Figure (cartoon, rainbow, N blue to C red):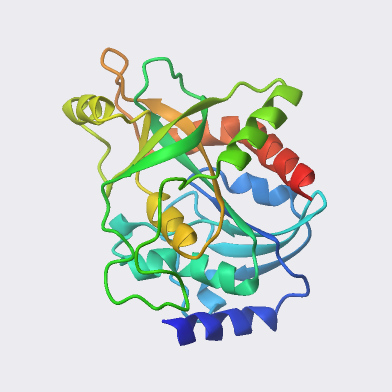
Length: 270
């Protein structure tokens, strides 16, 4: 896999003119942050050797290189999911490539179902930890050039980046929650009994992505910041029928606040 990663990264270097410092993965309905990236260059996933192609509405399927305020970034406008039929190596391959391109940190975002009874649609939840119910992407032979065999996950989400997010939120008068994200396979939304079960296990929000990418980022030694927009509610008495279009719509509504948080954090880091 190492040779495949290098080949893809070398190809991308021939197409771009900047050195990215931060990688950003944009989830369902959250691709609009990419419109804030200036001096941008774009590569379609279909044109990049080794890249899968997004098949889900709300995931445009392109890499965007440029500046978010004063920071050089590479943004994935669309990610890959286990429920699309991709294996874990394919899902997490872009993280490996971004690391090879020289990013120093990874920001991940997603749309999620709220399990915490204090959450409402539109709540922004900074991810403090996760519960993984997907296949672990590190199963199989380990390549020491990519990371250690048994990576520590006690700080899967960087505490300093979490503190910085709340500092930026206070300056912008944006309310943030902090909680545990549960990663499941999908593609079905959860049953009421499942929502109740996942809440009892310690989850505050639930979704179908993010965790594999975070595991691989930590394996690669990258600090991670994660933020989730609650787009539907999985709390007993508040559960209603939900569609993918509902998720996209609610994600787009809260995206302006998420963009302000991420841009503000990058300004301070820069």
